[in-house]
Amino acid sequence: MKNKTALITGGGTGIGRAIALLLAKSGVNIALNYSRSKEDALKTCQEIESLGVRSLAYQADVSRDAEVRSMVSQVVADFGTLDILVNNAGMTHFVDHSDLEGMKEEYWDDILGVNVKGMFFCCRAAADELKKSKGCIINITSIAGLTGLGSSIAYSASKAAAISVTKSLARVLAPEVRVNSVAPGIVQTRWVEGKEDHIAHLAAGTPLGRIAGPEDIAEVVYSLIAHASFVTGQTIVVDGGNFI
Image 1 (spheres, rainbow, N blue to C red):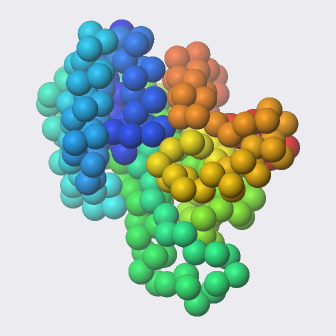
Image 2 (spheres, rainbow, N blue to C red):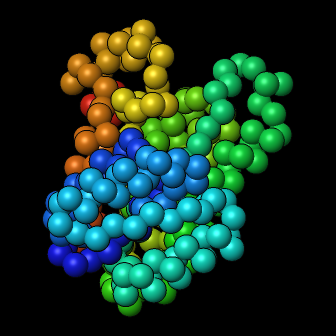
């Protein structure tokens, strides 16, 4: 893992930050993408560099293909290689599933733009470099894509689509590049701030008796990158046994 380079989208906070730090501890240089959270991204870069590896932050809206292509080209120019891509950037609008009129057209566009198109754009832009390095892709999806539950109907649909794209790309990019998905349940990040009662209810109904922290997701992502050399096209659910 030492001296490899990973590009992590949405890497400044939450799950992305935890993945970045864990990879950095193994000697991986980190290219950290952000859309709006520049201060968080720069702070995370400083934490990463304190671990003895290189880290640079790159602003790009992953839903825009030209910005993604420019970002990937710059990462390769700066680091000389691209070995790992973690598509962690995601977004949602919270709309009750029964509120059909509340699921506005622009919400669909926002959610699918980042969660599906953005993921695909990043994979496509990085594909040639990842083939050269015989690298791997990890897409952060969600159990919402398997259960049809979640923050909105559009969000669930986007994560189901992301899982399908993962399978398609695993076939297209083989044998050089492995492509897998990690599907968390609810995770203790800023997305769920202010929803303590909801979190407690979910934790009580989970076999392991708690919800995930970002580090729980990072551990599974790391294992797929570092150890699972014969695994591709799979979605690994990480939710403490809630979805069995």
